[in-house]
Image 1 (cartoon, rainbow, N blue to C red):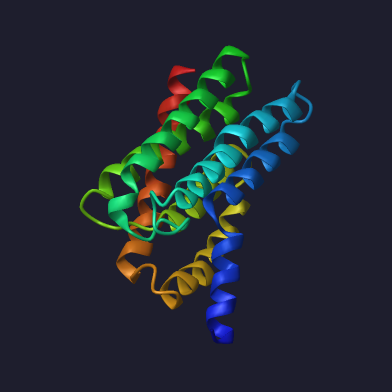
Image 2: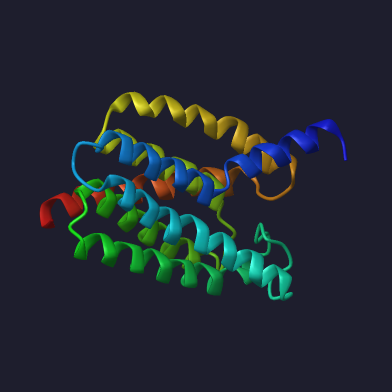
Length: 196
């Protein structure tokens, strides 16, 4: 393996969607630290949106149900993604029942919406969930906290390069993943603000 491939693997690992989710819930907790039990809400999100999806994919790979924890084969994505949607749904219900601040509810609703759309797209096309997992959270940070978070969208460049370098996606799949997640996230957050 060459240096470029090694660097691409490191970038792909750093920007795994569950790791980005952990960062998003952490930043949200910091912003809302004066509004009650944000540490507990952070841990709740960490459990259902980061830890359980990682354990699911690790377990499926160990059992030979998926060929790679990165889920490069689109045909292997549908059921894991639906299971992750179940995790996200449980997280959202917990936030709702325990009256979490709106950003926790909104962010979790976005994860649920994006993974469901990604699951159905995977039935016929391979969209980049890595790009989705970065673009959506950045849009959420912009929506709830500050437009300055949009500067983080520049991270899509090294992430896109890494996915191309590793042969995991083409340019269209990366672009579509980022666009789908960004638009869906903004729409869900806007819609949710009218109902909750």
